[in-house]
Length: 181
Image 1 (cartoon, rainbow, N blue to C red):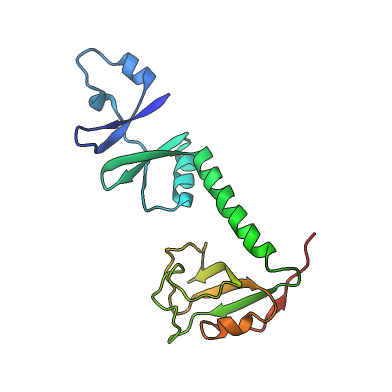
Image 2: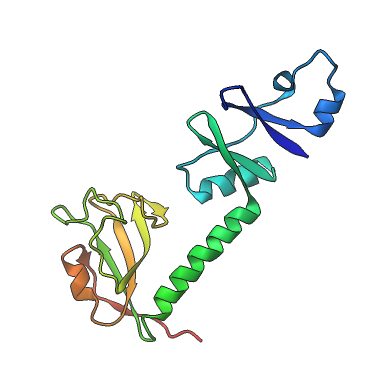
């Protein structure tokens, strides 16, 4: 079992195990026994937290707001958040009905999206942003992702929704989406 260690002002110091505390002599402090521990920032995405858990093979990561301990995340917390987000997206896509279309486009200079976050964007509700490719890297769309000129996007929508996207993106011709079960 491990626990986070914080200083008097609430600043995160590291982590300590019960075994390390039991092995310490009576003159040592908890702070002196604590060792560096992987952590994430409160504004990091859940993918960073999942990466920290996986990369360091730990069961939890502290969440820091500045230097202060704001909480901790476990894999089960991340899975619950993922399932909740997925359920919301599944409902959106199912609401578009069978025969949806996939649109691919590019954010061009002069688009009202440039410099705006997804949360601030005038993206029509009938369109779901699936992915953004930027300089060869895949970006999972989140509300805080800011659009840049040259971003390649994939969108899913009902037939006829491409008109609502034309003022935002330079679009390739729509592709019919394969019907699922």
